[in-house]
Every structure is written in structure tokens, then in C-alpha cells.
Image (cartoon, rainbow, N blue to C red):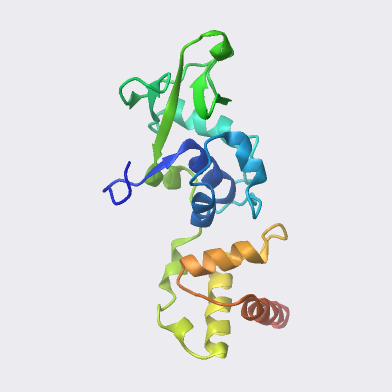
Length: 210
């Protein structure tokens, strides 16, 4: 679980951020958070998004969906009993839920504050999370790396191309420019807010004129 390891691991808080926003930027913004309730105060705020044809997940629904995939066996949740035992696979029982307990997120029943059993120090495979809840379409990575290095018109063109590929049905109104800039940077298209606004205007004209 250390930085540079072969397998990339996310904390439960990071995994929940991915479920909601489906962006690497959201995972990075929540890397230091220990509790689920802290996700409500992340800046910029998490924006529910979906790229698999299914409705996006709210922050309230994300913990339920994550634990459901653990029960189905699609996700392997690693943790420690009471946060101090040896690292092992967590078996989530029907009455268990993800909840904040002390200074960490745990899996346990309604009796965790009365001495009941629970698991904390929880980790999941980033690759498995992406497989269960896909992020941006792979096509966005096909934009040549050297295009953004050119003049501003080339950057506008690169941003328009990425926006068309990522949002073929239009950009949902809840997605803010800050999130688009972060996702563009992940695709190695580094542009300013002014250039992004020019690209959005150009894209609007292209869609109106066909």
C-alpha cells in the first residue's frame, strides 16, 4: 500500500470519492481524509458523474453500493479487526455497513459503539474500483501529447476534441469548469480557464451548426 507499489490501493474514503465523481482528481483531493463525513466538505465539492450509462451515485448511496459489490465478490476489501489485527479480507455480513467510528471508517453492525466487532484500516484495489465503476472513456487518451504545447488555437482545438469525446451527449450542467480543467490535465491537455471557456464556446457553435 506504499507509494510506488505494483498494485495501486485506495482508502475507502478515496474509493467513495471515485464512485461519486469518477475522476482521478477526486481521488487525489481526498487522499488525506480519514472519515466519510469529511467528503461533504471537500473543495471543490464532489460532483456526481457516470460514464457507464447508469445514473450517477450520490454521496449517501456510494457506501451502500460499495459494500454491495464487496458482498457480490466483485471487490475485495482488505482491513484489520478493530484496526489492529493482521491485514485480511473483510467478509461483510448482511447487517454490516460502512460507518465512521472514532477516527477511521469501519465495517460493522449497529453495535460497534457498544463493543461489537468491526474492521477498519480498510483498503481496496484501485483497478477493481475502476472496473466496477468506469471513469472517463479511454478515447480521451488518444489526443496527441504534443498538441497542447502549441499556440492557443491548437490548445482550444485539443480541448474541444477532448470534450467531444468525453461528453458526446453534452456536458452535464453540474460539472464545473474546475473539474473539467482537472480532467483535461489528467489527459495531458493543460489549458487555462480562459482557454477552456473558448473551447466550450467553440463546441457550442459546432453542435448548433452540426
